[in-house]
Structures are given as C-alpha cells and as structure tokens.
Amino acid sequence: MLSAEFTPLSDRVYLRYGREKAKSCGKDEPTTIIIFGWGDGMPKHVSKYADGFHDLYPSARILLVLSSTFQALNQPLEARIQDMMPVIDTVFPTPTGDGSNEERVLLHSMSNTGGIFLAATITAYQKPHGVDKRLPHELLVCDSTPGGLSIFTQAGRWSRAMAVGTSKFFPWPCMVTQALWFAILWIHSGLGWLRGLEPSGVWADRVMNDESVTTRESSRLYMYSKEDEIIGFEDLEENVAQVRTLGYRAVDLELFEGSPHVGHMRLHPQQYWGKISECWKAAIIRK
Image (cartoon, rainbow, N blue to C red; front, side, top):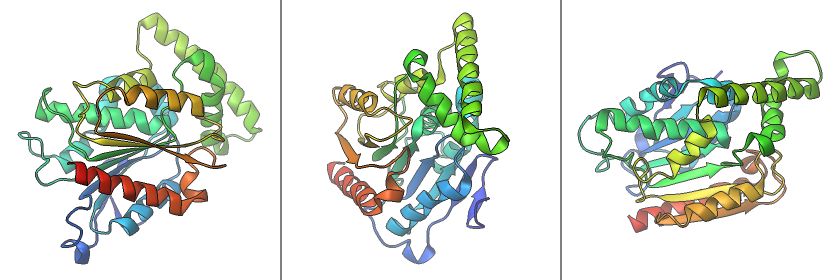
C-alpha cells in the first residue's frame, strides 16, 4: 500500500504533490517527475524513489506508475497506451501546444517493464497533441534498462525476474516458479510469432529511439551494474552506444559497483542521487 500522500489517478497511476512552501523555490528544478516502476515492484519499495526525489526536489509533483511484468508482457498495445492516459491528462491536459513553456519534466524508468510503459506514455502523448508533437522532457533516467530483447538469449533472465516478483504467491521453491515462467515465456513468444505480433520489449526499444515519437531535445542517463542478474551489462552498453549516434543532447552512463537489479539506489544512495542531480543541472543548462 502507498501512503496517504499519494492520490490514485487510476488503479496504476498515483500522484504526490510537492511541498507548498517550496513552490517558489528552485526555478531550475523539475516541476514534474514521472517514475515508471519495475515489474511487480511492491508499492512500498517503488515509493522509496518518490521519497528520494521529494528530498531532492521538494516542490515537484511526482507521478508513480506501477505495473506487473505480466501486463508488460501480455497487455495489448492499445490497452497499454490507454492505461497511461491519466499521466498525459494530468501533466499535459491541453490538446494544443507542447506544454513545455511551464513544465520541466524528469522521466525515470526502471527495468524493462518501466521502459515498456514509459514508451506507452510517450506514444499516448500524441493522441491529444498530434503525431507531430513529442512529449517534452529535459531528462530521462533509465535505471537497469534496457536489456537484451531476444527470447533465445534472455528467457532465463526474464523468467528469473518474473519468478522473483511473483514467488510470494506460490508455496513451492522459487526455482519451480522460474521454470513455469520460462515455459510460459516460450509459449507466449511462439503464439505472438504465429500471430505476427511485435514483442512489447522490442516495440518499446524501437519507440524510445524513434525520432517521430521521441524528442532529441532531451538528455539521457543510463544507470547500471555488471552484477545485475536480470539486465546484462553488455546489452545495456550496446544499446547506449546505439543511442549516442542518434543526436540526443547528451547521453550519460553511470556504473555502480556490486549492486543487483534496480538496487543501485539502495547500495549507493549518494552516487545515485548525486548523478541524477548532476545530469539534471546539465540538462537545464543545455536547454
């Protein structure tokens, strides 16, 4: 359960307002921070990132998006996009203009599930604003994402992530849950291939690097470790190398020592929040 500070905008999107006394402070600080939690992340755990951002930028309102790995894997594309409309309706309610005159937005995506619904939100922005518009934001932080996209190389990692997130629902050992998810992933992938469907992770990766959907006028920060058991560091570094060729204002990469998947903030809080603050300041200067 989330604390009373969060107001539900839907069954998956929650809003936390900034401190009123801080509203006149920090003209170069973000006005809105949107956090896309990792798959099956418990609200009490994901909300710790909202707490960290609140300490860093007390005047900013924070939107928290919670999703399951199953939703990221199985939800139809249009439903995925529609479920993110409360974010757009709250942050960019005007159907004309790009909203950038008043809003300074920081996006924070966690794991591949967070990345999938971040991509859905960026796509949802074009519904009321038009296909020639891009969701304005100064900085995108990618925490433990993206990873590899091939079922042939990633089924073991993905099934492990799903087992960790759902093991509390089953009485047997986690390895049994992982074996079940491994089989489900292969079946789901095979059925999708037969139906000609694009896997959600592949779709998200394409959208995030598509100039017709994503603005190049923003900065990116990728945070990762070589000990991540879910996201292979080689896959992430390869993705960043490709992104750096696309013309973004800045693409930064931060390595954490010894931290597990989406565990960098917990083990290295000073490095974590310090790097985000550094990249935000640089993004504002470049604007």
